[in-house]
Image (tube, rainbow, N blue to C red):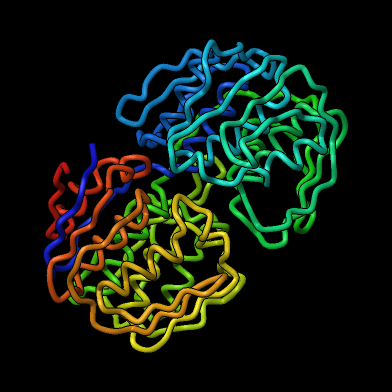
Length: 435
């Protein structure tokens, strides 16, 4: 069933909010917990469709998993070589993270497996993982570089030195997971820092890694030991409320227990540079991941040239940041973000189209966008089934001249279950309609 959002103009964002658990860490807690020796207890697990697709895949491969129940999951690990051949293809829904990371992990098993997904995932590029895996000795068939992936098991992988052609945490993680099974050492060098949740969790479960500058190295043959994992609130989900408070006069919101991993805080850095009033309190560390409460109070924003080095640190947050740019005084320019064109949708084009519909001057470029701040009008925009675009345009209504209708919003449940309820609680005038 399809859903659309009708968001009425005006309002402000206030109060204390806890957004759902971090999606990246939730995925990895299931994958590594399943391969560990012993029982891994997870709290704060994101019960969104993407992370649940990963959980279901490991259940299908014989891992006993209890939950999720209010964010609590118990994983009875089967060890590095305990996965069983699934009776059917593993359907990963909308989750590119699941497919890319699992391709590395499953390339080294002794059974054949097929990975499939929904229409959106079936259009996403997979050569970025299958090409380097082939160099390691994996045998994976694709549909012209796209899913489904047919992985032939029983291959002995060998370690490689690989320089990532573009900054991608998913490709890096895929190769590190394959590297746990490979003969010798696997080294991955990245052109710019990307999220390091895989490395942190591997270390937390006792798997040795070496980090030297921009290169991380793993050697095959070690083991993972079960542990407790407390998943922090997802900074990508918190971003929508951070931007909302930054653009709506009178707003003052505190987002609780949010992960502030240094490879993920581009959105905070960029918003601060635009003039946002953001402060961090209650900073702590949980399971190797830094967390804090993030308070955002309204302050006028100004357009900026987004620093190139911040782009990989905010890659998932740009749809929301484009809304901030639309409400800022002056021009915001983004370059070096061609990765946005191959996300759940072409996020550059889809955001430019929606902003143009709402009366904002937004010019897409090959690797970014130029947005001139202005007055957001009303209108009907299409999210193209992309959860982050749907939620971003919902927040735009706080500064809109009239009602905004957003179509094709069902996929919001993949990353942010309960979004509409939390947005209403915070002060957004939003209704969800089954189409």
